[in-house]
Length: 394
Image (cartoon, rainbow, N blue to C red; front, side, top):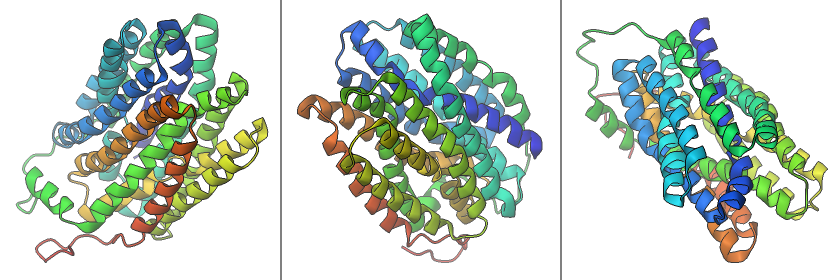
């Protein structure tokens, strides 16, 4: 178990850490290439959508052939996507690299793949905690990588910074060796087929509610992660404030995700999720209405950091708890698809509404309303294991 947790944590640290700083490239790239913010935002929106669409496929392949092979391919795609992102000179090429390639790469190197291995190698009573550890590692990667990426952009230029990150992405391959699993041959007759598992999950109301809640999570965090640096610069704050804000989100996310995983062993996970979403709505409301200063930004970032990816351990633990671990990566991929549809809308609408209205105010209030919605729909989620062979709740 320790090897799986250690290697999985380092993989998520790299994969999530690299992507967390993409918002730092918005202004350097758009100014250098002469593109609108919508061009950049659309490419990252496609990235999130491609990540979501590729997630169930990557999860299905990991469940069937092992996470190791999927992680190796994902690592190569990650490196290739970062290099071609630096070389792109048109909006279409930028969307193909920063959007499609990196989206597919993230599907094969992040939570759904790693969590499938963790779920199969950790005892059920420790599963939520173990997922919290992996999520906390991803959060630490965000804290660690944002200052590094900002330094690289400032000292080597935005293109060379992407080349360096491409090299770092290749280190996922040796780490993937620690997530190899013995090949399972000839399972029991009661094992489900892929089709049966999908029909069962999508017919179950709680699964659909989890997907809807995760949609909101994606909208909120990706809008903030990509557009907040530019929002702060538009308000006259220095680039260092934006860098510190993203780093604080990553730092406090370490504590938030670990705490959510730990609490998932003691408190109903649906209550944890509802609390996170309503807290986000309150925090965003206060941030938008309060006077904007560096310290208000830092307080907002620290508080949002506690809530940032803290939805990940309880959501995935509920999926494993209801449906078992045989198709954990695949089902986790479908839940994450909903997250990424929300991410697509959050990052794209951020750029679109900015170009239309000259500001981000409307998107902030959409994020607040969605937070209230997500809190309400998570309350009726049923966490108990599904009773196969018996009629299921509609």
